[in-house]
Image 1 (spheres, rainbow, N blue to C red):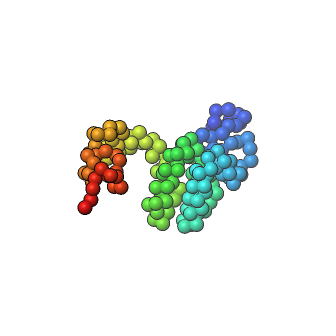
Image 2: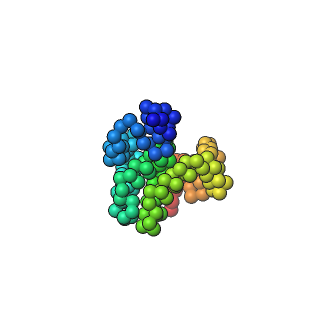
Image 3: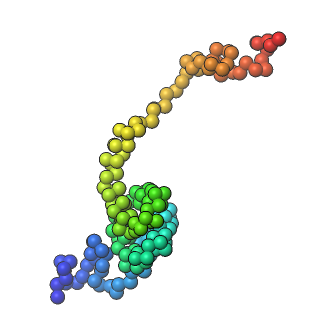
Length: 161
């Protein structure tokens, strides 16, 4: 029998992660997908998965958790961390938005990352570049010694009477 993946021996599906050669165990696959991430990303994903599973009854299934992790498996950790943080700050979980919403946020955020950065620069501008100020160039309005860095307090050059 020829599988729909293109060979009769079986392969791993890119979309869902199903491997026809091994027995399916979603919990083991969830753990293996999480272990591919760095520690900060693992913690954030574990927290958000726990939060979604506690607050949205229809999302308690291991299958849905696995599909979510498989869908974001090719996205860099920094992008996932940033978008999961935004998901938590906006409290989307309390509005009933679960794995599908977060998955779409992450995927579209990754695909639109370059354009979002350009739009952010248009909106807010760039930070000014650092310019080294020479000593006499900047006049301190609060000092009585003409802008020099040495304080006039305690010195014998000025008399207060």
